[in-house]
Image (cartoon, rainbow, N blue to C red; front, side, top):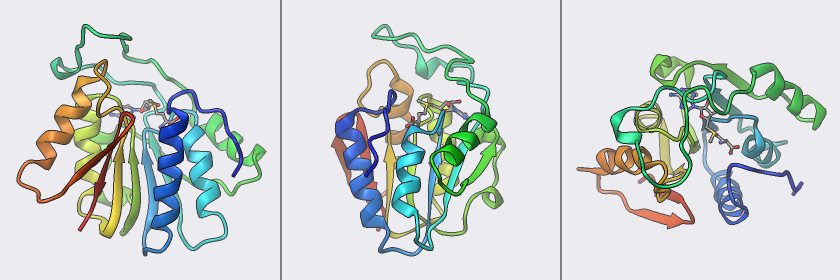
Length: 193
Ligand SMILES: C[S@@+](CC[C@H](N)C(=O)[O-])C[C@H]1O[C@@H](n2cnc3c(N)ncnc32)[C@H](O)[C@@H]1O
């Protein structure tokens, strides 16, 4: 496995993501990342799905983070701002080409603007990394009906106190659903039945 530098996701978290992505190869369904930023994790996922029938789909505003809502304010840690983490779709595309990968499906949009048609019909693996409450809430809503049994949804920053909206969105979504959460670093892993 190529060692890409990943400044958004820790090494332990990255290893877990890749382990679970490899396991998801046995399922029918594609791989998605909502909130791909400059594509560090995406490149690793591209390596996992290389030479398999699974396709990788990436989503980002490519305008950086959206406006925070009240659920996102925290006294702790870094103060994330609107427009932060901005890269262009072209930069991400070029990274894939430079690395010798097939360019994945890359969609530029706010998650709230995406519809069911923008996502693959079956998802085996979903990595949600949108940092804010509405971003995670909207991502969960987009993938929930597409996940295949045994599929996995991983949400980054669940235990990150600087990004309280992530846990709020996940906890709200989990209510009334008979699913178990597993934590690894700041990740939360949801196995779909
Ligand atoms: C922490 S970065 C993602 C890091 C990436 N997953 C990685 O592993 O390197 C968060 C990304 O989510 C995107 N984002 C956050 N909320 C969004 C939203 N509501 N719609 C579209 N993109 C969003 C931002 O533009 C940013 O690129």
